[in-house]
Every structure is written in structure tokens, then in C-alpha cells.
Length: 221
View 1: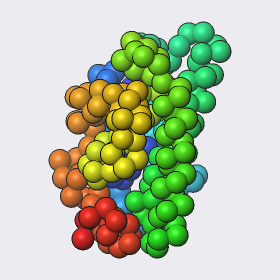
View 2: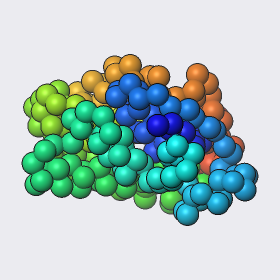
View 3: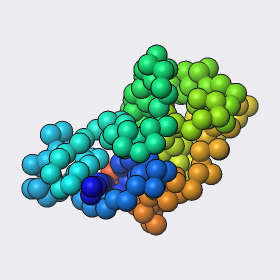
View 4: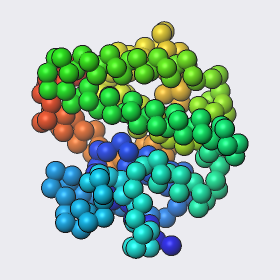
């Protein structure tokens, strides 16, 4: 079986799939595209015009990061989701929550004016409060067992750390469990190896070019 992941270099949702591939030691190829000017072949395989897209044996297409991650889990150990149906559904709920949180954070760091920036900042902080209340005392979201939930949030924490907004969004004194979880995920080798070598430059340049107001608030310019 051959796997090809179609990616945009700074997309957090593609990064989830890469983390899973690395964690499970699954061989894969990755193809990077420019989402602003996608090639015609990409438009013919991605119904939403989004990444990630996973090509299986150059024939079958899977899209949406949560579904790709579940597929990768199922073809390997199967250990990244609980076996209990109820707990598995709960995990899927919090993975969906991660998607919405990531989109709100992205809206904040790409805001073009103060009103949009402040609204997304407030919404992001509200959702982080939900996480702080949900997280337990273990090493990961599900206690001591690493899961797809951890993978879903790791790209977000990489970005809050890189853009130096962690203390603004969830200061350790107010968010002790979330802060500890974030710091733990940031040490994962799968996370550091899931992005291109110039990821920080590309992300900051993208924000500066497309959202000068947010770039000013983030001290990028």
C-alpha cells in the first residue's frame, strides 16, 4: 500500500496527519501545493478544495484530517482511540472541538482589524476555558494514554508557542492543566518533525503578508 499526503506547508490540519504517520511509523510521501493557486489535479480530487487529502494506492481519496487520522489508526495499532464506544465518541467530540478552536485561533492571527482580532481572541479564550475544565491529571488528554485527541491539539500549541501568545491565551497561573499538557506535547519528536524546516519563517511571513493588523499585535512587524 502506498500513501501520498497532499499538503500546504503551514496547515495545522495536515500537520495532524503527519504526526499520526510519524507516530505509527507509516511510510508515506508528501506533496506540497500552493492553496492560493492549486493545480488542476488537486481540484479534481478535493471536494472542499482543502488539505489534507490522502491518496491511497494512487487510486482512493480520503479527505478531512480527523477521518484521515482515524483511518491511519485503524490500519496500524488501533491504539489511538479508546475501544469503549462511549469514550471513543467523547474523544471524537473533543477532536471536533479542537478543529473549531484551531479555526478561531487562526481567525485571530489572521485578523485584518481590531474588531475581528478582539472577537476571535475572546472566543479562543472561552474555548480554552472549556479545555482547562475537561483535562484530567494525567500526562495526556486521556490520562497516561496518548491518543488522537492529543494529536488534534498539538499543532495549535506549536503555533501559540511560536507566536509567543501562550501567556496571553492561557497563562499557567490560570490554566495550570492546559499549560502542563501543552508543554508536554511540545516535547514530542513527532511534533517537531511534522513541519518543514523553515516553518516558523513561512508562518510569520504568511501572517505579515495577509493580516498586517494581527501581525502588529503579534509583534511580527
